[in-house]
Image (cartoon, rainbow, N blue to C red; front, top):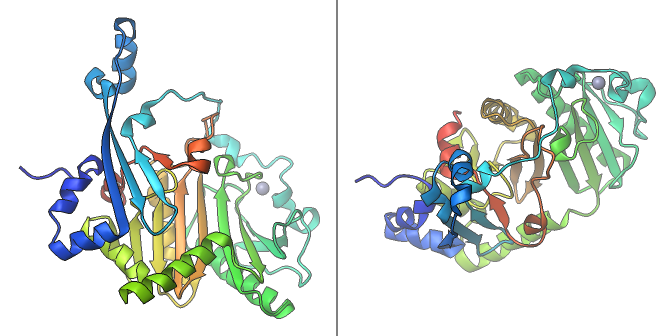
Length: 345
Ligand SMILES: [Zn+2]
C-alpha cells in the first residue's frame, strides 16, 4: 500500500528515504509522534461529531512534534486545532474598498517624507514612517487602496521602488548593511492601516534572528563542509516539500512559524527578481482563502530569503499567536504536505 503523504506519517516517509538522505534529515530534525487522549461525555457527542467530524479522532489525537536541531524552530502539528470554534467579528469584503478618511489615499499631504524626499514608482510612492522602529524606516504605499487587489506588474514596481529606497538610504548614510522589507497585509498581520503598504528599514545593525542564522550558516559550513540552506532545501525536496523555480528554491516549511509558512531562498541578483514567484504564491494564498499575511524579505549569506505566512481569517476575533508561539513551540494545524499539493506554481 502506498504511504499517504501527510505529516503524521513523517517518520515512515523519512524511513523510506535513501540512507544518506535519511541521515541528512536526522542531522537537521528530530520528530516525536504522540497521542493526545481524552474521553468525550455522552452529552458532548453531537457537538463533537459536528465540530470535529469524528469522536474516535477527537479521543485519540495524533500530535507531531518537529524540531530543527540547529535553530530555535519547533512545532506541534495537530490538524484538529483548525476545527476549534473561533469567536467571530462581522466582516464584509467591501469594507476593504472603503477609502473614507484613509491617510494613504492622500499621501502627499497626510504622510511625512524621508530626508531624501519621496521615490515615485509607477504604481506606488514612498513615505517616511511617522513612528520609526529603526534609523531609516519608510513605507512603500500602493496606489491601489485595497491590498487584496494585486497585479503582477504592480508587485514588481513595489519591490523595485523598495530597491531604490535602499539605495537612497545608503547614499544618505553609508554603512546601512541591514536592509529589511516587510509586508503586513491587513489587521490580522498587525497592519494598522488597510490601504496596501510595505515597510522598509535600513540600519547599521542586522536583526538578531538574521545574525543568528548567519552565524549558524558559518558554523554549519565549518562542521559539515556544506551549505546550510542548500541542505535544508535538499531535505524538503526529498520529502516532496521543496521546488526549484528558476534561481529560487521554494520550501513548504517543515517548522512553520504559523499556518502555511513558505520560505523562498533565491540566488536572483536583485530581490525584485523574485517578484513573479512571490506574486504567484500570494495568488495561491488568496485561492486557499488566506486574507491576511506577513511577508519578510532580506539578504542572508548571498541568498534572498523571503518568508510568507498566513495569519487567519479577517473575521476571527482571537489572535492566532499565543503564549505557546511566544515562549514554547509553534502550534500549527495546516499540514505542509497538504500545502505542497495545494500550491500550483
Ligand atoms: Zn487608501
